[in-house]
Image 1 (cartoon, rainbow, N blue to C red):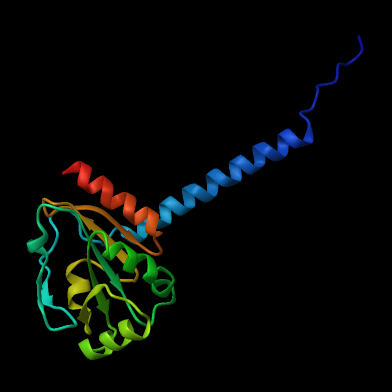
Image 2: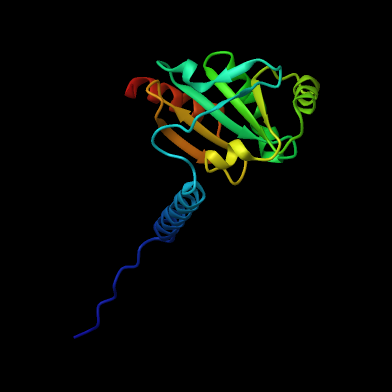
Length: 176
């Protein structure tokens, strides 16, 4: 009896399968890295955040109870923070947004930076990283979406798109 040949899949089918496997591996690595980087971040009830804004006005996160808020940690020396600062500024015009400038100098330094870059979001200077430490932030940018009940709904480290943050704020509002 003659041996029968097994039909091989067309090369395009092999390429498609390999591409899918590679994409799944990249996605798994990305999710794993995000999980690993987010481990030290605060969760559950949001830590207290009472401080003077860079404009010297008092701020207390508790005053925003009842509506979702974004607490965003950044630094003037952080290149990734610079990429997302315009998105954070736009979000601050529609949502409750407070930013914490970690190890970026004094209130005057922060105000100069905001003015030079045309940014209007509220900022708190955290020159020694004490606020960041209380929130578990070891690297910037880091973002927390706090629900109206004062609980952290979402936390992430690294670049976030404006659309992604907007979606998390919207979801936090729906979860309350």
